[in-house]
Structure formats: C-alpha cells, structure tokens
Length: 430
Ligand code: CO
Image (tube, rainbow, N blue to C red):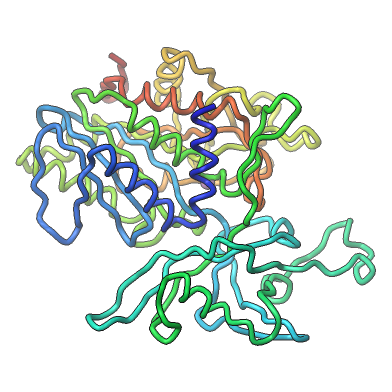
C-alpha cells in the first residue's frame, strides 16, 4: 500500500513533464545524487551518483560502480501525457465568457476532457533585471472547464460525436474579463507585465484514487506513463549498486513522437552515456564496447483487455490488470523487444517472483508505439519494451491494477540488481 500511496501522491503533484522532472530531481537529491550541468565540465568519481536534466523536462540519473563503467542497465519511461497546450496568444471571449485558445498535445480521447474541472500548469518565462528566468507554475485550483453541447442540440451524440479541436475544445475560465494570465503570474509571484513567455498546459483536476469493492484498481489521470516513471524511480533508488552503471531516464515528448531536443529520439541519452564513458574510462573505443554489452528496458503502459470489448485484442497475446509485468512485442518493431531480450527480462521477473504477461496487437489493428525502439536507433543496445496493463489509455482518467504497482517495482529493482552479461547472440544473468 505504501507504493500505491506514493504513486498517487506523485501523480497528484505532477501535472506536466516539467513537474515530473522536478519531483524526480528532488527525490534523487534527497538520496545523495549530485546535479550535473550539460554546459559544464563533469568530474565523476567511482561509486558516484549523478543526474542531469535537459529543457527542465527530461532527466537522466546514473550510479557508477566502484571501478570503471562496467556496462549500462537502463530503464526509460516518459513524463509527458496527452493534454491541451495554451497557444501563445490565448485570451478569447464569447457569450460573456472568457475562453482560452488551446491546441492538442498528443493523441487524447478528447471527449473525456469535457465537463470536468481543469487547471493550468507548466513553465513561465519571466523577464527580470538580469535577463529571462523560468518558473514552474501550477494554479492547483479548479479554473477551467470545457462544456459539452446539450443532447437536445445533438440527438445523435450517443452514436459518436466528431469533436473539432479548434471549435469544441476551448475551456471557459470565467466571465468575460477574467484574466488567466494574471492568475498564473500571481501564482508565480510576479507581475503580469513581467511574463515574457510560457509553456502552459491544461490538466485534469481529478485526484488519483483506488476503486472497486475489493480495492483492486487505481483511477487517475496520466497513469501513462507516470506509473512507469514512478515505479522505475522507486526501483532505481531501492536497488543495491552492482558492478555496472544503473541508469534511469524519464523523457519528455513521447506523446508527440519523441523527435525533440530532449525526447527519446534526441542525442540526450547518447551524449550523456558517451560523456560518462569518456570521463571514466578515458579510452576512445570504450563507448561502442560498453553499449554493445548494455541493456535497456523501455517502460510504458500496455493495453489491458477491455471487458466490454474482448474482440479488440489478440486471442493469444492479451493481458489483464493485476496480472503482472507486460512484455510487448511487434513484428514491425514498434516495440524494441525481440526473442532474446524478452526471454532475458522474463527471467529477471521470474527470479524476482513477479508474474509476466505477453502482449501483441491483433494483426489487423495498428496499436501504438513507444520510446524504446526510437531510443535504440541512436543508442544501440539490446532492449525490451514492457509496461503495466491499463484501460482507457489516453483518456483524461485511466485505470490500472493496484497489485501491478508493486510487481513493477520488484521487477525493475531485480533488473538493476542483476548483472546482465550480453554477447552477440546470447545473454546471461548473474
Ligand atoms: Co506512454
């Protein structure tokens, strides 16, 4: 229950990827991790614990062994979730109401954002005497709502509604004249005139909670992928160090394809690992040989078979909530998993006493993608895609299994604590 409570508090405190990085950095610092800056020289000592951020929205932490680098054992997840981003000029009004002009961030189920209290959070750019500064902001109160059209004006609403992001999804934030930007500035402790820029998002105000007569499920916004971000952080902090380098990554921008300066497709991970190897090993050939012996677990939630729509899932490769960690496979390699990486990770779980489930989409349904396969195109190491089974992915409120949260922490802790030995065509666990 301690883990599930921790996860729910984490979700409640993390409305955006910026806040995810802030929470993770705070947890790492209390555990003795030192902050590195990409723009400065790194002096690393053996056994050292470090972390580095990029754009304040992606984070990589690592823990060196007592000698050298060994190899890397990486767990990667993402801290962003589908949402609506405020446009640069966002104040509008209609019919006596103040509205906010927003656009989609990622592919959400838009209807789930209707008729529920929303708030605004993100990053504010403030101009001061010495230049531009950034402040994380979170209004942390019910300030916005996107109202539905009544059934009387859309009698076919229950047969499906086509929602237009430009027309249907603008939230009301007060009566005409209500000033959202002034409220955001005030929450950051600055005058509205000092605001020079912003990266602001709407978020669902619903708090994470457990439900079911047997308390089997958790309902919360942003379970994809804060469930994996939180459980991997927890496992990383709990794991005993070994003779390899443990790495924790939480990337931004997975929901918009990862192709950004700080996303999983960027050079952030490669540049970080290269810098670690060069600084510690001082050997120009070391990077390639270290990467070839390394292993990545890409952790992003999976689709639990929907009890009302069993026909949408593959007959033999479907998964359930509370059934354990899911290993995801796809022939087109939207998932990085192959036979060897799946078998290796299944063995880690088996030795940790964690049940494993196998997921593959129906052959006539495209399904989704994630960050593992994108990351290993530039950081070339064997990888497996895993996740926890959840319902209603990309809804404003998603559902997952309570028991799975502990399973994931146990599995990832066991992964960090195992000594994985990779050779071309073989893998060993010691
Ligand atoms: Co995801």
